[in-house]
Length: 264
Image 1 (cartoon, rainbow, N blue to C red):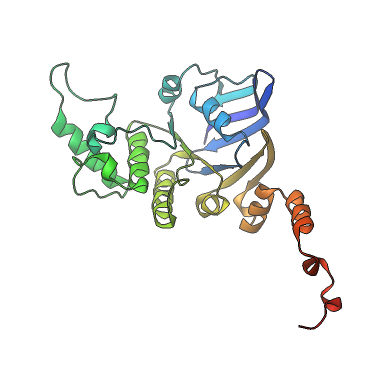
Image 2: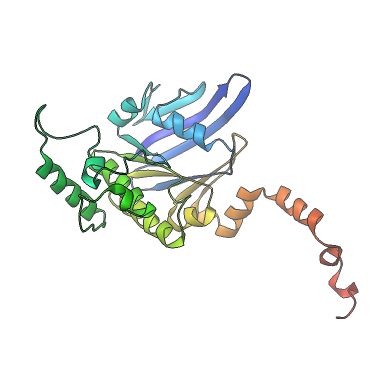
């Protein structure tokens, strides 16, 4: 089932063409990876999906209906949750307070803290996150654990499509693996996931489809079955441009015919 689609989307800021003719399909229970280096247009794409910015060209469809979102709240009301790289958490607040930040349970004079603690604990457990104490400040968690709390929060509050902005960018190898595990868990829970990343190795571990951006335009769109990790990495790095650069930078000994090299 298709949750959202971008068809030929473009975005211009003054004289700067940030996106041009970009298409993306997000389906339930699948992970769509968007890859690109700095300046490729990934941030602009996220802002359009999340409702922060309107597109200038093309169509944005949610559940087959064309939309023009004016705010992240409208996107969230349509089941689209975005988890940004900085997470927007309050480090000194407990995990459960961050989990319900802006959506607290209870009346105007008394919060239902016991219920919020219980829901936080259960929601994290369903995602496979076991915390000894949801009262501990979220700032004491590892970067990977904080990402997982943000993912579990989006799932709990009814997200159908989950957009993840570089979730492993600032993490080490082990913590990146933890986050990718929970990205896969979100897929297993039936969500459609958009994984924005500049790391083709992380994308290939979990992705079902790969869209490559370069200078605001699509540089490739491939189902997993039709592309290898090696080819994905090469295309993202520049393809033939990278091969030409490698040849230009190669030492003379590297470019010569091995048969003509003097014996060592």
